[in-house]
Amino acid sequence: MKIRELHLFVQEIVDHAGRTVSPPALRAVSCAVLENPMAGRSATDGLQPFVEASVTVGEILTRRVLEALGSRVPIAYGKGVLVGAGGDLEQGAAMIHCRIGLAMRTAIKGGRALIPGNAKLAAPGATLDIVLGGIDDGWNYDAMDTAEVRVPGAPRSDEIVLGVAFATGRPNARIVGAAESVVQDLVAKLRG
Image 1 (cartoon, rainbow, N blue to C red):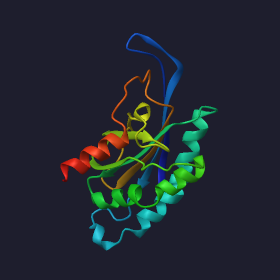
Image 2 (tube, rainbow, N blue to C red; image 1 turned 90 degrees about the horizontal axis):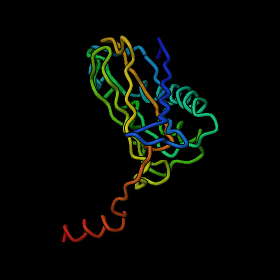
Image 3 (cartoon, one colour; image 1 turned 120 degrees about the vertical axis):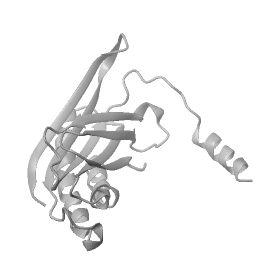
Image 4 (cartoon, rainbow, N blue to C red; image 1 turned 180 degrees about the vertical axis):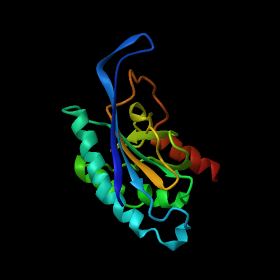
């Protein structure tokens, strides 16, 4: 798939809710605006080109994001895609749910936890909200966050915006949630 544009967004949060964030929290998102060669066609015409492109483009995006973080070690990651109105939502889903995670995990040499991902049909300039979760621990509440970006003028009707995000954690994170074992016990009781 042909790349029309690459974008890199870095958010450095130094103060949040009247409190200094030290060290500053970083969220970095890299996006590619891609042509959708199957715009106007159903996903039943084949999804393999989208899966294959996601690996190649995912490597580029991941490298750019990690370079932007510099020496800071990410604890959170996520991925997302916007499909232009002429596309099929499953084309975007094929890009984020099948193999892009392999490129992300390879680059960080980790990633036992599921990588949050979302796909939506969108008009040019729509918001891409990438949900972030813990890299090795899906129950790491400090990693749970959202990176929000907009790519000017994209996606066009025949385009896809694919995004990869990494972050150093929510600014001044301080909540403690239920442990995984507590949730598992509750679910077991609920199911009888």
